[in-house]
Image (cartoon, rainbow over all chains, first blue to last red; front, top):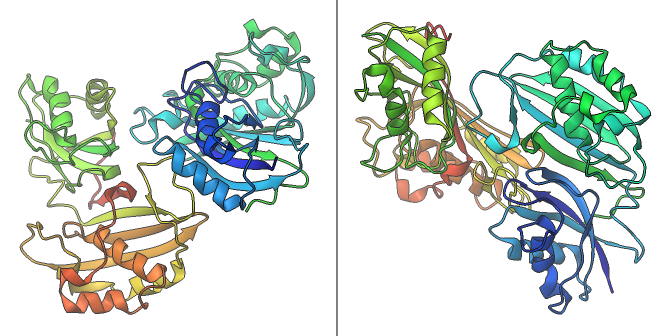
Length: 253
Length: 253
């Protein structure tokens, strides 16, 4: 059967996350049901580059799916988008891929952005896309603290209790913090991440940004390997899955 | 009584617009009710720099309001924001102003931004903040057409039938069109605008961007003074009120 890669944009606010959880509204369930008419009415299985949590968004997630119909990628995109209406899940582009191609296992790099709104007033615009932190953040101190976390480490201290990964060792390639007006953005890139790793890193860096902990503290937390010592898990709203990288990249149609 | 200027951010999606319309949810009604506890429980009257339509947003609208209590501006901001929860209307800042200061009549310039999402897939993120136009737009042609509309003119051709302004003459100071990736942004600035003027200009420029009309057409429509000849009124979703300008500016606290 023809195999496709799908480039996805979704608003995670009202979903239980990417992954199917029974009858709860998941991105996976919505996508598979929308694609079933292209698969002789049989529910196909979509596997994603990353299983985002409830409330986490995506502007460039990737999934693979096998469909009975052999169609031009633009037709696959339009047919699925017609059926996901009016839900906020769309296929930006589709591509034909090899029968053994995997959005999850062939992924060489994943990128996230986390947005903090740092001002007295809560957000009225994009309220579900931002973490509101009233107290002024020192983004430069957060960035300095973040640079001490780069490289290959045991990230047990930043891992959710529910994390199912076999190893807590990950290589953090990029963790940049920068102020953009009233917002503070955190950009995180790695081959793969542990469950809640980005949100736990953000919650810990914010302690530094608020001046409650020194720049060296997130590194100390890392070395302590104890999740109980890190900062809070930042809320899901501010997190967006930006990209999944493949070599070669799918030939998006 | 102390008079305040309020700098406002709101998401217009679920409001009938700025202005009170009986019991319908309006931004004005929500704001006045939230401010009443600062006015001995009596409903104050808020007057805005611009009466935005249903579905139109604001990131920097200004309103004036008189309140019985003499409070530091930051207290006014926080007290109103506490009471507008969880609705998407917030005071970004407040300022004390003179008893005769008017957000509407002292305003020397108003700025709007209109965002078009120009790609095959509809928006999943910010779906209520964008007009989705699938067909590829030539932003450079739209910009060239827009420059022919600058200056002082009778804008009857771009005015809503319901417009209550005494004169259809306005001076358009800026109408820039630029592509930003998958989006096309239109920036409009003038001392004041007619009802639906920005949305009618956008709907007309899009005809040029799609190649259905020549660059000179919006200017011909202007000179014809006939609303029936212009393009469609662009949907409200893409429009945001950016700023109102005063000299001197209120001393935002």
